[in-house]
Length: 417
Image (cartoon, rainbow, N blue to C red; front, side, top):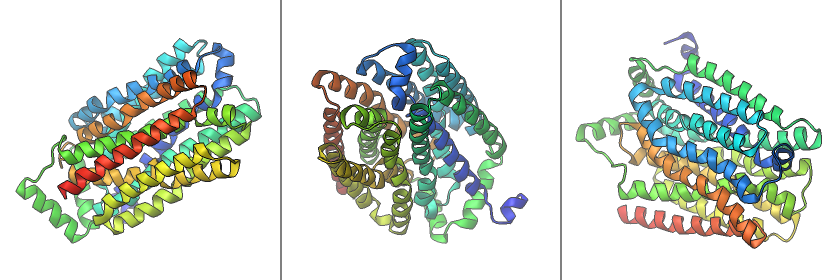
């Protein structure tokens, strides 16, 4: 064990920090174009809402398609061999979009970015599942997930102030992202252990930090060959729940800044400030609730169902708000109790119910179903806006999907229990 680990910094601590930074940079990219559609159109020409929604769909289609193949590659060749080429491709795609002169180039760049990012989920959460002690898993997963909130908040604020208020060319945002991605690639190469002794090292560290009961449970499950299939009823319920959770969130990521600008009268930096409330409110919400979820592990299902119902209510409050104050309150509460808060608990639930081998494939399948919604939500919301004249219809669709999925998830898990 190296010196830094002897002084208290263990390998899984480094993994948590590195993965958090990975999500931060990915989420600086994801909403960057949606927040500055008018500026982008000044370069590529006027586009319909449906055409603009397809930019996000190109990214998420490629990202989703990569999930299962990338997970299998992670299990076969290791995390480094998958995530480093993936993020290198992501950096190239960012540069391509930054130099785009028409929407076709942006579509192509978004596809390549999605392929590159698709290498990350299976690598990240298999590293997490293999190295983080189960007693700390929900809280550590929440720390990792705060990178999503942090990145989203940074992106929305940066685009609003740097591009909209201060007049910085929108292309510079993509160049900054490319530079950050190259720094991350160096971090992956230096920190991730992906050799033949990785599993033994991770097992040793887990044994020294996990409780005796956790280790005994793992040994007992291995000895009895206890497994849960990829498509057991519980796993299918988790896939449905994650699909619905992601649908609402990516609808908001894709269209909230534009909704606030075109239908609620927000301008300049206020667009980014209001939109970023969802992201920044999620950080304390995720950390505090995950701590409780680790303490009361037997109540994880109750946490998930309750949080999803609250998320649906806050979305409804947001779109029906008659004042700016109520709208902002709705956004804050969605951040506190929405996707970024429930996701670490749902991931911990999947870690406990999924097969104990092939974590890369497990989380690839899980994320494939969740991210399928991100391919559908942006263009469908844009299409509904084109035919109804308002994006509020898209919010209502997201709320119904979330409530139906929550009911299915609860019923299947109650029956199984």
